[in-house]
Amino acid sequence: MFLVYTDESGKELKKNEEGFYRDGPCFLYGGLAVEVEKHHLIENAFKSMCKEILGINNIYETEIHTGDIFYGRKQFKDLDFEKKKDFFKEVLQLLAKFNVPLILGLVYKDTNLFRSDLEKISSAIYAFFYALDSFLLQRGKYGLVIADELEKDIKSIKELLNRNSLTGRKGGIKLSFLIRRVYFEKLNRFGEYSFEPIISLKYKFESQIYAVIDNIHYVNSSFSIFNQLSDIVLFLFNIALEFQETEGFFVDKGKLFEAIAEDFLFFLSKTKSIVTFLCYRKKAFDVMFGDFYLSGFRAMMETLKKEQANGT
Image (tube, rainbow, N blue to C red):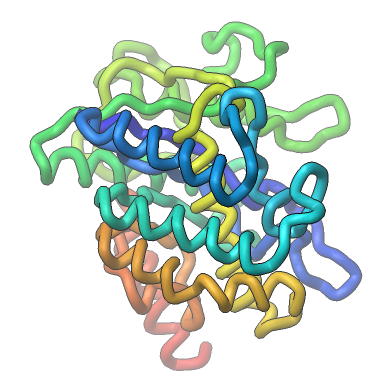
């Protein structure tokens, strides 16, 4: 059985003055798939790593935010470049040794594949579920999905089922609403509830999720080492895409990422991580990983690839 610890990255949909998205060109949703038997071994190694490199004696009293380490903020403001580099390298090598893959769905923010930002973001979460289900079925295993604790003010899930406008008071997408809605939709067991899905898929039975058991489970990330590990890997993936998209525009980010890029790619390839793109980009990592498309999107993707190749 696998415990799958999830997180998101790149939820800001506005651009900066230079015309780049503020936190990367993609919205990412994914998680690390940890076999139950390896759980405590990885946990103990990570606690020792944090104590030796970061000076954190009790990981349960200090929630690690990857951005704070990467940019040297808050309690990590005096952490030098070498220690930052060593920390990220050690994390990636540890996950590679224990063969903990990243299961990831992502969508480019500027794609016109979807009618709205609501569909755009939910498609990345859909993609994560399809990739995860395929991963589990190929191994004959079940998986339990665990997410960071979401906002407390969410009403009953039943009230969200037929709402295709999941917005907050200021009109922006309330991500916590959306995640719960999509989770319930994808883990709804074979039509036990009747509601309109956010995205219509082509094949009814192919599009069901079979190997993910129960419904979403929540933890507070400050008490969950593996949710923090998922945050680290997703952050690095987002930085890779941003650095690639801007062709090195973000020099301050690029220096540290370039120092750990080899370890990052080794981790992805060694664990055979599943990276699902829902928009074709010549520069993206999809030249390195096999694409896994949602039900009904395959023909559309092939058309997009042909148009890209022809320059249309």
